[in-house]
Length: 90
Image (spheres, rainbow, N blue to C red):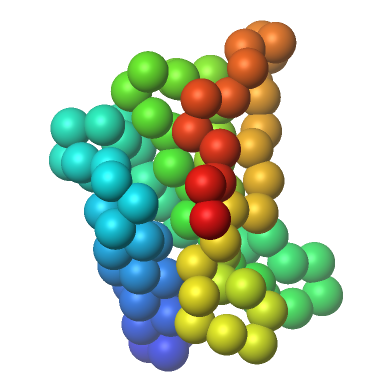
């Protein structure tokens, strides 16, 4: 359990750094961020970020497989057809 919490905290911190380096002010632009398990047979963690200006979209970030590089892995639209305005730029 302790190792899982360390992994989750590291992923969250790395995602905040990634977004900050990409020009986002996380404190003012991101409404919510939390870590979820997106794996089925194994634990694979991702950070879900909801931006203030897109409350119906959840952006998922995770480590690129085999690296410590954060990438955007998915955008989930919750009941709307709103286009995304925070796509990954890298």
